[in-house]
Image 1 (cartoon, rainbow, N blue to C red):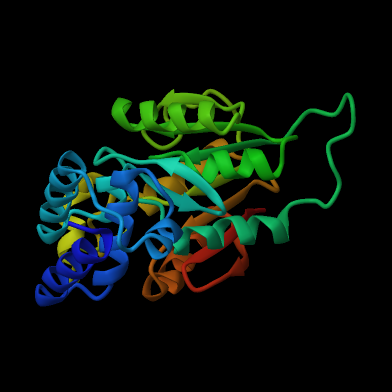
Image 2: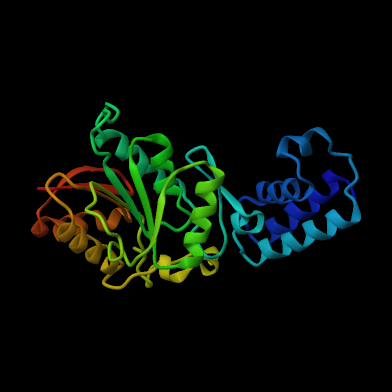
Length: 275
């Protein structure tokens, strides 16, 4: 079977199952299988696929038809222009989370740390793949960055990404800030915020539920985070949270009694400063 033939059949099968990005999914799967970029597929449509590669591509197609996310099938996902390894132990990095990095650009000082001045401590809590904390370290090398998670499997993925991307970060097994030994200057957090009653796509069934869902309308873990940062932080500590747009006002209501003032918000992100 040629590249063009396989792509046509695979895209038709996915389209029949109502996958909105059927052709793209087929191309990504085949390109990963034959270890070439997608542009190669377009340039060599009549090239024959060897039997072994075809079998592997077909098996991966079946996983996709079962709504396994493409990122898990190919083992990586792009985030902020960098490739991060992922597995079912971690959430797949999403474009919405990049808003936290953009927001950090607005609140970070514009000058690098001076020699002899203590570096600011940034902690990415519930780090998963490490995409937020590692990106922050690579964008601001002067930061002292730590990644925390309750899952050893998730931290192993984050450590692998840090090595691959040459990011010097510390990692801690910790429930939010419990187990993190320092007072943070900046906290980044993409915590579970999905209310289980909300409609969910079939793909989410393959991602770790404890990294997605929270009680109290999706705000239970975020509330604990706010409490811990207020107790462990200091005046000027920044807290940047990802959440659903419907939740941002409620998060503000939770944060204010703990001494936080809102600095910025975007569609899926909000930034507070501890008074």
